[in-house]
Structures are given as C-alpha cells and as structure tokens.
Image (cartoon, rainbow, N blue to C red; front, top):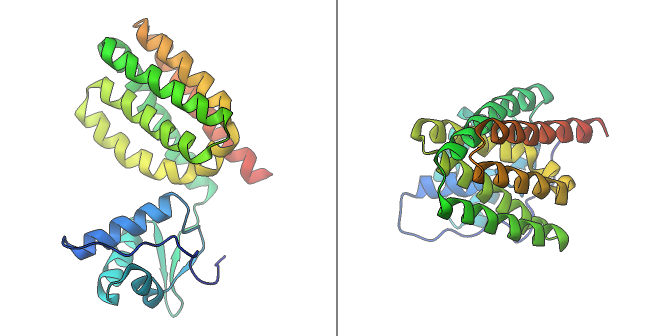
Length: 225
C-alpha cells in the first residue's frame, strides 16, 4: 500500500520565481506519472515541503488539485496517497488511447511531408539504439517523443488536445509495460513510419491500433503475473 518516506534524491528543490502552487503541482505530477512516487505511497505534506524547499500551503493546494484530477487519494484521518489505478481504469483509458492514436496515425499518413518522415525515422533509430543498449529511460522518453510527433503530423488541434490529456495518464499506467516490450515496440514504430511515408492511411491506422493494443495486453500480463 504505502512506503516509508520518499525516495532519496528524487524530489528537487524548486527554483523561483513563478506561481509556486503551479510549480509544486507540476513537479508532483511529473514524479507521479514517471512512478518516482509510486502508487500507494503515503505523501506527507511536511516531508514534501522540506524536499521541495517550500512551505506546506502550496503542497496542500497541489495535493488537493491532484486529488480532484484522480492522481492522489485524500483519506480522512490518514492523509494523501498516490492513487493506485485499477485494472478497469487502465482498460478504459487505454481503449480510448487506442482510438485516438489510430486516428492520429491515419491523419499523419494523409498529411506528412519529407521533414516529418525524417523526424520519425530519426526517433526510430534513437529508440532502437536505446533498446539495444537496455537504456530504459532513453527508450521511454523516445517513445513519448515518437507518439507526440505522430500526433503533431496529424495536424488536428482538437485531437491533439484530447490525446494529450489521455496520454499523460496512459504514460503512468503503461510505464512498467514499456520496460518489458523493448525492441519489439520499435519494430512496430518502424513499420508505422513506413506506412505513413507510403501515405497508406488504412495501414497506418491498423498498425497503430495493433501497437497500442499490445501495450494493453502487456499491462494485463503484468497484472496477472
């Protein structure tokens, strides 16, 4: 359920100026989505304030906002805890992500030019090297960059806004799975890049749909393992 204390050296002191509550919120959200602050961890206001170098007030406000958004659970007489996502929550979110990402891939195939294709190919090369070197952090960051680039190439602001909300949480749910899929994920990315380059909208959508569904299956296998 919970862990004793925060991981050492992982919560940075904040630099000022800027709206302090926003800085605290953004920092805590990033630490949660990257699972530095793991699901079930007890978040103690005074400890967080000390690590961040701020007073308890902006920490309290950030925790309340994170609770409203579903990242943190505030329990009466117990305090704040990083939310532990259920399998049903993950299923629902990853299903929506599959729909959005598949449409983004289709639109990218319709709109992409040489510069966009070159950017995808460069990201594939970086991701493949990271997977070969077992550099999990670089592979995960490059995966995010690849999917972000596909969404950018789709050239649909509404779709991008919706996907941005969904993918932030999907990144949280899928972080452990990304570590397992390794090189296979980049084989799929490379196939998707070829489909987009060929302007094959139907194939691009199908590959992206399959790719995101593999992530869902990996999540289930991890939960059952």
